[in-house]
Every structure is written in structure tokens, then in C-alpha cells.
Length: 121
Image 1 (cartoon, rainbow, N blue to C red):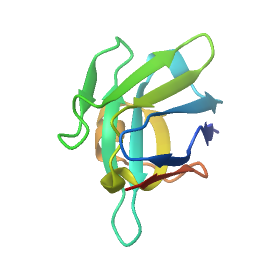
Image 2: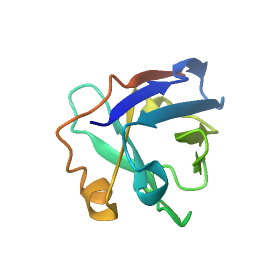
Image 3: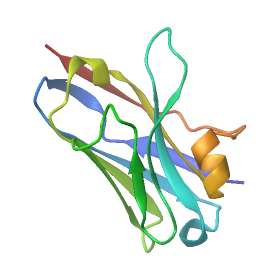
Image 4: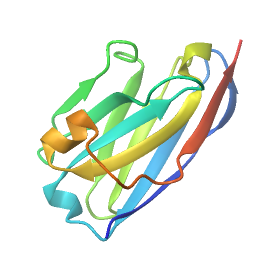
């Protein structure tokens, strides 16, 4: 059973930065892809960034050039460095892990508690 613990969210002014962390236990971390997602109030959860077990990354157009996803297979942790934050980035951010197809499609029954990111203008 995978356990996901997201942290690092907070309140930041537009243009600022935050670094999110997600520790995953109970999974074959190093063998799986990882993804960061976000859900804003009244909106569906959306995929923000993915990283494969080989380290290849992909980003939603809305965050490309501003966010960076990385992983530490020793610490079983995935990170999301968020720079040049905008009010539109305000959301609860979640991570998840599994096959690359599952990560891209968000095909998971279990989600962690997420971490709130609020960007003020």
C-alpha cells in the first residue's frame, strides 16, 4: 500500500518561489514514474509535471519554464521547484506514483492529503 506525504506548500506573493516535497513509501519508488498534480477550487485535478524512472520530464504548458520536477530515489522523494509563481497557480498540490500510463492519466484510487499553495497578487 503506497503512502504519500506532500509538504512544502504555503502562502507566497506573485513572483515568489516554493519547493514542494512528496515522500512515497510502500512502493517500488525507483522503478516507477512520478507525477505532480493540482486541483484549484471548483476545478478538476490536472497534471502538472511528470518524471520517469529514467529521469525524463514533462510539463503542462501552463508551468513550462517555471516549474522543475526532480526525484531522489534514495530518499523516496519527488520534488517540485516552483518559480515565478502566479495567482493562477493557487491550488492543492498532490503527487502520485505508478506506471507511466497511470501517472499521465491520473489513474489512482489513493491520493495523499496534498499541500496547499496560495499565491497572492
